[in-house]
Length: 369
Ligand SMILES: Cc1cc2nc3c(=O)[nH]c(=O)nc-3n(C[C@H](O)[C@H](O)[C@H](O)COP(=O)(O)OP(=O)(O)OC[C@H]3O[C@@H](n4cnc5c(N)ncnc54)[C@H](O)[C@@H]3O)c2cc1C
Image (tube, rainbow, N blue to C red; front, side, top):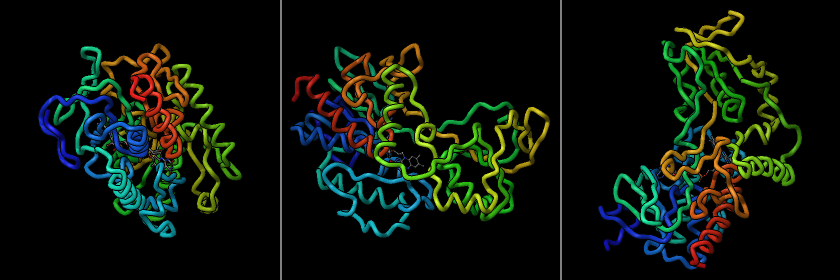
């Protein structure tokens, strides 16, 4: 059997593994670390397949003005603190270089068996195992840890007239810099943290309007460990009942930071309700009011990237995947599948813990412990 080489594309053949991890962001790296620590042999018993060209998960793709001081908080991966790879006092460092530097050092330190760029196209059941079809080679595995995040699945609501708009529409995922909008009127849609941060940035170079579906809920005071646990418990309850996970902001609220206070003082937080139609040159509300705009920036969030798992038919009647297991990472319909970085573990701290729980439970289930 050909031996794949780390850091390169795998050779063309079906490679048999015990466990395949899909995705090498925070969740996939944590799972890989724990699989190795629990005795699984890298390259021989488990591999990690990652679509991104470099280490860093989705962080490598984020806009340059998102720095270590403007992210919420990036938790350390298990076994190696951020500070060992980077100067953590350099808070103005863009997250899209800082996190990839940290992840690259981490992958090297623990010699994790990561293959990239390898895109998993589809996973199906074959002879009691999983067949993992990629753009390079096929893998066969007894168990699966899926850690594909949300970045590849931007969500834009289906508003009538979207195709008619003659200006530019883009999603948070496509945002690079405010400068490209200079002189244009930008409608920023979305009441989450990204929407507010980008509104702040763009409003410094051009005219903006802010539209949100619901009035944003600003949270006064610190988001302490107890508040964090309560937020996670809410999402966990939903996925344990087979419901699709809520958006992060709907459970955490938006911290009323000094930056947001300054935006309020600049009169930027006068949000408009959601429009009902997009016209050729702007947006229109049900009462006929309209607004001309050259750009619509959709900061309307992401969905879990799970399309490649469709043949496993994990979704239930309530529209979500019923999750079970200690930290709700195990798919109830097929206990050989774990989803990490999904639902209650869709944060850097959650992904860390979920990786450990998934590695342990899956190995126990497959009698590999
Ligand atoms: C703008 C923004 C800011 C955020 N800020 C914070 C923050 O400050 N703190 C925090 O805790 N959380 C934050 N989050 C949430 C954060 O992204 C997650 O907590 C965490 O980084 C996600 O890690 P992950 O491993 O689940 O996913 P990702 O980092 O998205 O990694 C998934 C990996 O899987 C790969 N992949 C996807 N599909 C496939 C496929 N089919 N085949 C192979 N590989 C595939 C991708 O290429 C990627 O490398 C933020 C999210 C956004 C969108």
